[in-house]
Image (cartoon, rainbow over all chains, first blue to last red; front, side, top):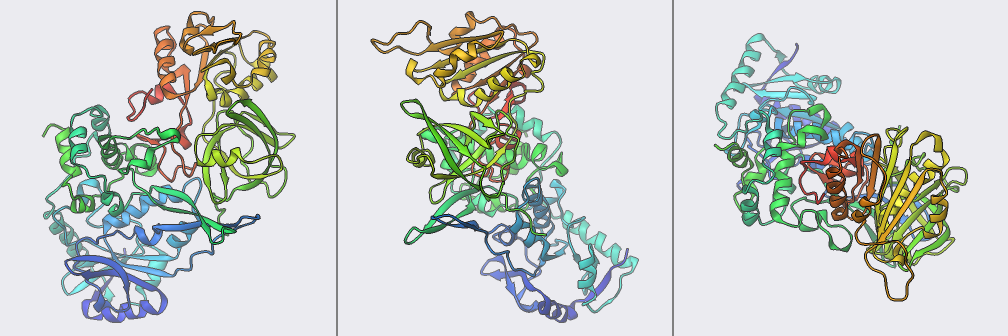
Length: 342
Length: 280
């Protein structure tokens, strides 16, 4: 195993070399929170960030996206291929694992050309998380605090230096741009210690043992109606989720109605219209059923069949955003504990 | 290589229109012209996505498929945006089509077995191709029994084909309606479709049941047949859910871990038991 130790004071030069080749998106401080946004230098980034408001999903699955455009007299035109040559700098393990889950949806039997292009043309420089937040529980989901795969480069903060490891051919090319010395066994020990330090900070966890059966047994548990009473059905949980993939498909007509486009836009299972069919029938009319769907999909049956490679794991990667942003204080880790009778 | 955009539809022409009931029409749609994008063969029970540019797209079953003529039939009742606009379309006009998708009726598992079809109203449409196949490959299947219920006699679809269905060797057609308007002649049953269970001859052993209709109807079909000894793995249901993509991405049709578009729309009841948000 190779790897490089990069002095922290050479990070600026490294990022500036990268910016000649890629559009760089990294974690930026915005008031009390962080966001992923375009950066041109290392100084603009805050690599001591906890969790961004929106996950990097927004770069791969835009809120709105044209599937094709059409002319009413006939003729379909495909959208131009997305032109990206981007690099996400400092993505945490939870969000990186989330992209691997989204790959299962959008690169499966019917791959999405635009998603495939964006994934292919976006380099990922991951960062071992040492800023475990109060709502984080990636460790118990098996998705952090340091990723095992899926990155081009993985950085781990060792104090004065970063241990940098390449996870792909592209990653090796990226690392060639960084100044540093070959990593030693001591650096890898340092990484292991950093991971242990992060692990000691988790306050939340989910016990995954038999969790799909646990949900199956508790479909009629009164907890769902109680949560339904609290739930505002605002959709913040879904919009901030790094693995939620649901979308609506709509048609848009351009003035003077001689052309238009079919597009997809983010949708959310917690919204009333989500499961509505013709004549007003609705299979999840009650909020209780909708919050059960959100939590059940994330913790219970999400791992069972939808993400084949991830069988046994869940859709949830433990980033904690849905807990942080829920105005009603719904916490899926507490729900899972309560279902276990704890 | 550029990936194929799975949402691109094929522009297809409406070749024929046939009135089935006052609010249900069968459209014969030709996909002979233009770049061939449809995922043939059409397997009975699968669904297609039909759309009208500027209005939207919706899932539909098909009621017939003619490979040689490169046409399929879809039998549609006007209920929503897309069907309302379809209802204004005539012969020669175009619709957009992609698919078919999903898992259809278990025609392989049914070989050598008796087949019981239980349909309610428009639910007869996706079962009609099953009758076609049994008639064509008659030796492959055992007895065929069709139980069909509708609101009134004039709501029965494909009534001009009933005689040819009855003429299929070893086939039975039992009809029932909820009510008979004054002055209408009716010499079949009156009542919900499950009332026909008393008259049917299909036995639980060695048979496959395929049912389609309102989910509440299928609930009572499953309940009634289970009480008679039919096993959950032999009872196949076609489910309806909201679908925006048809290819297991948009998430609307999820029932617990299942995607109706990918894992269904036809499911054996054994796979549905214990799932949330079902009426059945």
